[in-house]
Length: 394
Ligand code: AOF
Ligand code: ZN
Image 1 (cartoon, protein in one colour):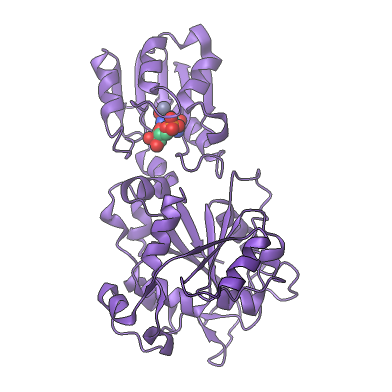
Image 2: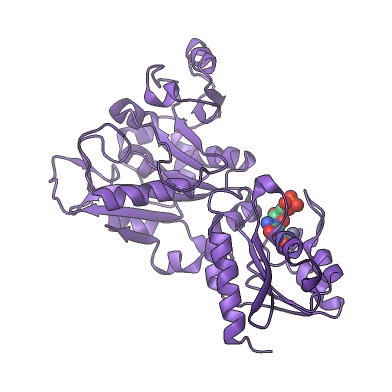
């Protein structure tokens, strides 16, 4: 049966409800549900991880007996498995709904079409694909993680029009008098931080800028935000704003060879310190998607970035915002581990004496060639790949 304008309006409402839970559902997806008889909504809701109930159950509880005969509009296929809650497919069947419309199927291998199949087998009209692109885009990090165990990586940088990083602390330092980009861009940065499970930077940026990497958006406080520093030798100062503000939300990833007293001192300040193996230059070269790297540091052992992301994935981190300097930007791009790039351009030229965006690239647009092919999962938001991975914001 084709979808009607009423169907679209209700699904739009369900998407709106889901969008309102940004930062509140990870490691679960953002999901909204509307139950309606014709134009009349009898129940609606969204999932929030801390409150457990899935979106369908929130809406069913609100609708009570009025759920009978209603159409359920869900932004993600109702689940068919027992997790922290029972299967939503069964809850909808038991409530006697007449029709279920899902915006998209759930990429979770435990569900993956089985929820809709169960509903259809119960004799209920089950359809999917209404406003699918929007629904998928909202959960692209969730899809990446559930399918690969790795988080989705967004590289964020504030640049001059000639594609250079600012010579002074810019996007991070709260008290810094100088910002490369304006207020609108800063608000956007905080919105991006708010939508990420982790913000990742390198010790070089910590030493140069003393950033705090907090979410200062005005949005409802997110469930968790992990700040991560790649610091193979544990050089992060105990007096840094990151360490001073650590409340079990700062992870320093170092090499097994990092001085033990430094590791211990950081732990004593409430910092989580974990070591991961280093990758030798030859091993990195074989996994590089890009031509030979001529930087001097390209010939030293470095943290294995793939192992770093895998570890963050194990910690249920679905999305990582990379806010780093040229060295780490280059390393991530060269390893083919960047999915999206968000560039904020300021109306200034900094000139060749300033710092390039990535060590081996003066033109950020040339880097687009090195973005990971995000189409490897058919659930991941296609338009970011279609736009060649760059969302430019001013
Ligand atoms: C739905 N509606 O609102 C959500 C769904 O551990 P649990 O029980 O919370 O299950 C988590 C999985 O359930 C998650 O990976 C995804 O497959 C699905 N999420 N499904 O029907 C919802 N949040
Ligand atoms: Zn469910």
